[in-house]
Length: 97
Image (cartoon, rainbow, N blue to C red):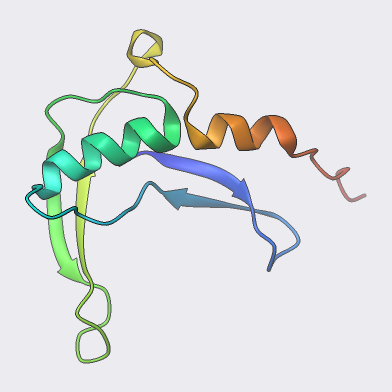
């Protein structure tokens, strides 16, 4: 799992959000996290480790979450990702006194 900070439009601060996305037809959950991580962060991961899988709201939705772990370093950065492009556009609000 890669956690990415982003400014929320619904809060007055920053939140940490896990990389997420849909599993495409014919794709495994592991292939999806490798693809989504590259698209969103610009980091190429290999051999993600499955931590657990669970339903986000049993009885309310059929959404199932696959939670993975993978380490990255500077050499794994092969692109900018959506977060990188987004971060350059966002100007941080001044700190509150």
